[in-house]
Length: 351
Image (cartoon, rainbow, N blue to C red; front, side, top):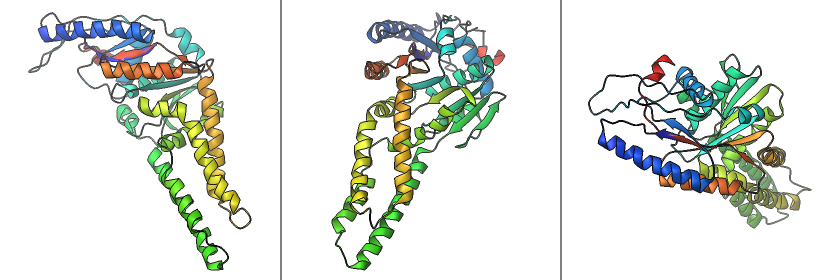
């Protein structure tokens, strides 16, 4: 399925709202046909859903198929409070019960973090095992959504839910600094020996790290996920991924990244008798292993479920289509696309 976020609701007292509802209904029909997937709608909320209580309320209603209860609410100047409700079919149970790893992905700004938090909170309330909510998104919005500071190690959120928010930029910066430190030390000693002119090789090695493939920082963040995939501590894991373009690179990057790593090792092997870069070499070897493990996990339709999230716009559905197309032939299991963005009233207050 695909999640469609921020779907407008009926409001007979607002012509502009009704026009939007009509446009979105047409879009949703076309998207369902074009993507060949069922769509799960999340209504547009008058307030931003932040904090475990509100997010869990969304999960309860969306994932259990409960009706979004719309209650009358005071209107503020220029605001429109719709008066209808949507019923989301409760057909997610088989997917949620069978899956272990849920990859929540989509275009930037469509509500991935809201869906990921809601899903994780709901799962934590349905299973006896622990659930891990893991974010690789450079925007660091997971902590903001939950209203709880998160670290790069598990932080308890509820009795059975932990959260981890990685910092991809820091991981890449630290690796580059460590790599360059070892390279500089090696070539400084090499030049002092007057035995060889390795100027070109030094420039090549420095250039290789500066020309690292786009998305390497997020791959490094995902590599940290493997320790939790291997662990029996977590029965289910929900991954709040970076925007679709970054996630697509994850699907396509391994070959590019392996070529880049291979180029570094070719130069290291040339000087293997006199040069050691133990930290960089060990990290690159572990990174290669982690990439293969993540790839195998994504291909395992028995445990991995990809949850696309979209909003009712042409660009969003096209990007979601690109994602679904990229997943074809990869043996990945894709849940119904979820749409977000409809407008209920004050049900969040009682959730």
